[in-house]
Length: 174
Image (tube, rainbow, N blue to C red; front, side, top):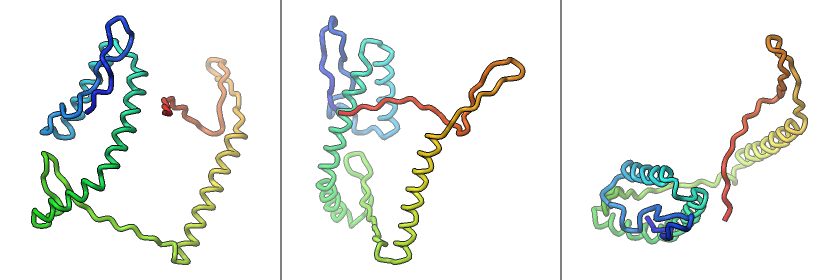
């Protein structure tokens, strides 16, 4: 991968080298082995308690965007090269290259919007989706909790008419 974190002196409370530099990842590793190494490296960093893990996470998110952009930019050029390789390998759609399996695929996308019945169905789906969202908003706004008394303990329990689950997460915007 890419060396995304600079080394700092011990008296600075910051991150160290967290991931492998570009070219340092053994090209003979398969996906499962790469995941295993990444998991081990992450656990080592987490366990060391030397790093500000929120900073590490944010920096990794930056490189996630960076790498995804690089991949998207190289993809069309890699496809051209893969097509040449395929033609040199008796037009095989799947072949080995640089310790990876490369598959050239064909995908057909249909545009059904010219069909009257399909368009009517699609419009109905759009309308029903809108109605569903409106109903969800209404139910959220009018969800008054009911207070119940537990007969065994006498404890007051608030019950909502609409069950809900609260999930906590982290959103990073760059």
